[in-house]
Structures are given as C-alpha cells and as structure tokens.
Length: 211
Length: 211
Image (cartoon, rainbow over all chains, first blue to last red; front, top):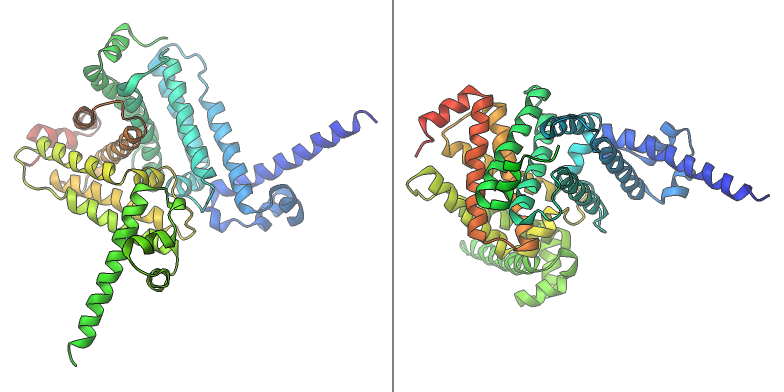
C-alpha cells in the first residue's frame, strides 16, 4: 500500500502534462481566443471535465502552457559549448528562431499584447524569460554585475531580437539565416557603442569575451 | 435655435476631454488597478454617474486615456526642423523621454504587460504608436519603402528605446542625457550594420540622410 499514493500522483502529473502539451500545441498555432477548452480536451483525448478539473478554466490553462513554453525556450538556449562566443551566440539565436517558428501564432499573439490577464501572470512570465536571457548572456560574458550601460545594451538587444522575430513572422521577406547574422552583427555593434560609454565594457571587449 | 445642438455637443466633448485628462493624469502616476472610477470622478470634479455615462466602465476610460496619451506622444515627436538629422533624432528622443518620465507608472505598467483587455484594443494602440514612429523615421529618411533590412533595423531600434525607457524608470542609475546619447549612437551603429546587409541602406547612409 505504501507505493499507491506516489504512483497515483505520477499518473496525475502525467495527465496534466499531456493536457499542457496539447494546449501548447494549439496555442502555438492559433490565437488564444480561437482555442476552446473542448479543442484542448479533444486534442488530448480527455474529457472537458478533466481539463476543468486540472486547470479551472482557459486562462489557467493558457498560463500553464506559457510557463511550459518558457521552460522549453530556456532549456534550448542553454549554451552547448561551441568554441567561440560569437558562434555560441549565433547558435543560440538559431535555436531561438526555431522556437519562434514552431510557436508562431502563440508567440506573435503573446508579444503583441496578449490575452486578458488581470493578475499580470502572463506579463510576469514574459518578463521572467527576458530576465533569464539577460542573465544567460551576462553569465556567458562572465560579468556578475553588468552596470547600467551593459545592462541596458543587452536588454535592448533582447528586445530587438524579439521584435525581429515578430517582424519575421509577419513578413518573412528576409532569409532567416540572414536575419540571424544581422542580429549577431547588431550585438557586436551595440557592444562597441557600450564600450564607448563605459570603460569597463570596453575592457571586457578588449580582453575578448570569455570563451 | 439653430446653434443650440452644436453648442451642447461642444460642451459634452469638453466634459469628456476633462474626464480623459483627469484619468490620464491618474493612470500616468498609478497602476491601472489602483485607479477607481471614483478617483477619476473626484479628480475631475464630476459625478461617478457622469463617468459611467461617457465611458461605460474603467476599461473604456483606460483605453480612451491611452489613445489620448498616444496622440500626445505623436504630437510631441513631430519634427521641428533642427538642422542636422542626428540633432533632430536627439531632440525627438529627449521629448520621448520627457513623455516617459511624465507618464512613468502608466508607461511601465502598459509596456510590461498591461491590464486586461479581451478585445486587444490596448495592444492595438501600442502597436499603432510603434508603426507611426517607424513611419516618422522613414519619412525623415525620405524612404517610401524601407525594405526588410531597414524596416527590421528601425523597428528593433524603436523596441530598444522602449526597453531603455522601462529600464531607466526601473533603475534610474544612468543620467537620462547620457542614455539618450547612447541611443542615438545605437541608431548610427545599427544603420551602419544595415548598410552592410543591404546596399540600398548603404547608399542612403553614404548620401547622408535628408536634412
């Protein structure tokens, strides 16, 4: 009898995961307002009642999917040990754009304003992803405290990558690989500007970023 | 009797404007969830019933204030004929940051995710401001069709200015004037990168932007 509760929990967690996976798939390809609880239930081979049982409503389900997508993105961006820093940046960007492409409709809808959320949970998840991206880059640069110039520069660059992703989804009139190269060039150019505004950034660039 | 309806409409419009002004003032200094219809009525010296009469509810009032703020921002950014393009850009940025500072709480809350809005009106207003800023800059550059490289570069820069504004409100650990200079330097550096990715942009820069 000792193992029963643990096994039951495992199965409950797996059922919940399956619902989230089905929901994320739908929210990635359609705008949230076009996805119903019934759609998610059908896609997961579950009952409408089960979805309500786990999530209470569509908004909670949306937030859970978003959290899952955020975790997925962060896992993909974890550095993998390419040799040079710019090469690592370039690979990271490429994985970011894979993610953007796979979650196209959901990514666009989310970052253009997103669905209603009084508690601000959605905004909080988006902000948390941005903060972790910033941290990922400063860790790569081996900078513990970036200071205002570098912090603003990197946050600006992250915002510009997001915007480029949205623009690319909207227009697709530029090769993805070419866009990724341009964004790497942006980073180099912006760091060079940052170096002119903060000597610590200049020293960091002159030393060469940590490999 | 012929003038009566017209005079009545004028006064109705003015009353509505006064309510919007009071609301914008409150939404600029507090997060939307902390502003009540009663607060707006009190600030405008009006009754709660009158606010409901014109706006139906807080969300409508918020959207109307936001539209009014967007118009104000666009009016402030209209170019005023400083001599050199970079000087004009620099003055425009300075007026943008005046606006950010005056509407601090509202600006931060809005761009961090914003309040609930099922119809996406809030997101639409934000997107429309971004589109007009893009247009303002391409008009300044006398470019009718920017093409993907220049369009993405300018949208990225606009996103980075927005992000820098949010960061500055949050930390205020850099002189505003210094931050503005850095953002002008960003634009120059990003256009230089764009020139390497699109010969039409290079020609535009080499010719010198229209003065």
